[in-house]
Length: 68
Image (cartoon, rainbow, N blue to C red; front, side):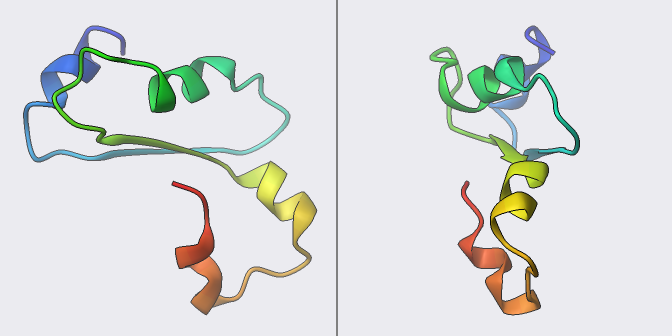
């Protein structure tokens, strides 16, 4: 994935990765936040398990509140 991500950042493709379970998610968070060679930020990682632990119910209208 490290070789593909810089190439894909030059296209109109977006990658959304949703982490379910205990992880470890360190590498996904690094892809999301710390890859400087991308043309634009088109990789988003969301740790669903962490969000689900904080909220008892995620309503349809609350999806836009998820971190990006």
